[in-house]
Structures are given as C-alpha cells and as structure tokens.
Length: 293
Image (cartoon, rainbow, N blue to C red; front, side):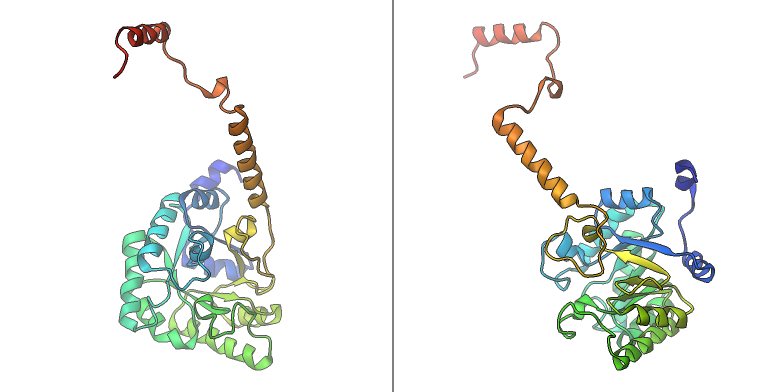
C-alpha cells in the first residue's frame, strides 16, 4: 500500500475493530500525549492511539498516574486529536473522574467527547465500575475497560506488580472481563498478566482484547511510547520491547550542541542571515553619526 493510499484510508470504528477480531487481524495501539507523537502515530498507520494518564510520569515527571486532572487530560487529548485527526483516539479517565458516581462518570466522559473529540474513553476496574460503564454507554459513548494491573489503584495491588498469577486471581479477572463486556464496553485492555490468562480472556470475549504485558494471544498490543522509544528512563517494565534508544540519541545531540556553543563552532556561516547589500555599511555610518544613547 502506498503512503498516499494510507493517508486516504478512513478512520477505523468500533465495528472495524470487531471485524478485525473476527478475522484474526491484530490491532496496533500506542500512547501519545502531544502533537508530534500523535502525527507520527497517524503517519505509521496506527489503529488506535491512547491519550494515557501515563502522561503523569512520561510528560509531567510524577511518580504515578493519580495526580492527573480532567483539565490536563482534556488538554493532552485536544492536542493529540489535532495531531491525529484520522486515527481512533481514546481518552484515559483520570483518578476520581469516574469512581465517585455514575453521574460524574457520564459527565466527565462527556467532556472528553465534547472538548477533545475523542472516539472513546477508557477507565480502570472490572465489576466495581460496571454501573459507570453502563451509564456512559447509555449516554451514547464508547468505553474501553482496563483490568489486571490498574495503575490508579496500584497501592491496593501492592505496587506495579503482575496480576492473575494464581488460578483464583485469574478467575477474578475473567469475571471482571465478562462484566465489562456485558456492561457494553467495546473493547478491553488487559495489563501485566500471564500469557495464559490473556489468551483465556481473549478467547472468552466477543469484543477485542488489547494487551500490554498480557502475551501474544490478545487481539492487539499497546505500549507506552516513552518506553518503546527508549526516552522514559525512570523504569522499564518487563513487558516492554524497545524499538529505539532515543534517550541516548537525544542526550548525545544535546552534548554535541553544548560543545559546539562553548567552542564557537555553532552557528556557522550557513546558519546565519545576512543584511541586504550595502545595508551594513549604511548601518555603520548611522552609528558613527548618531550613536544610540
């Protein structure tokens, strides 16, 4: 397929994702938080883009996702939408934007759709957020669920640790997955679970199951862009494959710039603008006749 043909391809919909699952076509999914990265995602033909509350760590330098606000998430989502106008964009519901009540969940989800033109929202939790999912779906909006390692409640889970590693824990996850599908979720994200559990949930559900650290058998894969490009250096989860080492490249470029500035080798002639012919001499004459006071 040519680049021109890719540009003309229409944005995928929830129905397209259902069809991809039926056909066994894998769904590609990355996070983005700003205009350049969203643009790159669209140029690469990404199926979905998540404006994740992981921006708290990757962009804002915070230790976890909890501090992110609705206003911050809306702004990031607006920027990503401008960068990827023809890509399916999902806004991540921040902590306490949906847990308080069904009504507040609907209202905050509506803000994403109205102010950022997202195609869906995502929220964490299984059976405990079923009423919120039902309400948002009844309001005419698409919802992606998120189970397994749920960063907003990582304190309850004992930190950023893999989930579903015992038969009993895996059974609880299957119940959560089915509850999300029954509530009307169009898709499910499963994070940090053994591949066997990811496969069981994927085979069990009719809706697409996306994995992030859930093995190869899910209907598609998500990675955090800072992780897979190698520029988020605070920590690297076990499930991350680094496709680049941009952190090292950026640091090397910054060091080279600093050296050039200190030694006077930047800027060079080719980086400079020139006055119009004869104007420099004219300026020198003006300075001699009437020096600035």
